[in-house]
Image (tube, rainbow, N blue to C red; front, side):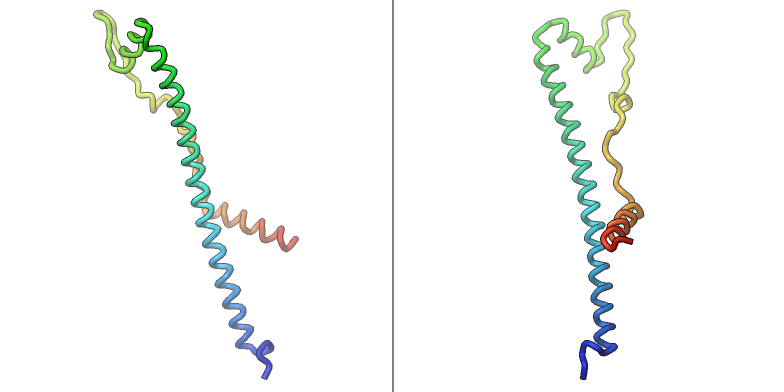
Length: 121
């Protein structure tokens, strides 16, 4: 009896190939999700580094009494008698620069492009 020529072996081989393709696709989705999350965290770290540098520069300038007054008026909303103060949250002034996660449709398109390039269609 020929094992490699039987229909059962061919069906088993097709099932194994479909299962492997499905597992590969799931792994690509997980990799893309983790890569997006890593990119978001890197962007957050760089934003925090920039904020840290600006805070360090601000802390160095606090020896000057005029600078100290300026910073304390800004942070604690202090005003001189007769002045009017307007408070605006800094979150509204700074746009968010974190990358958006890639949709699964784009992931499938990029996966399909890789498959096509591999088989040279």
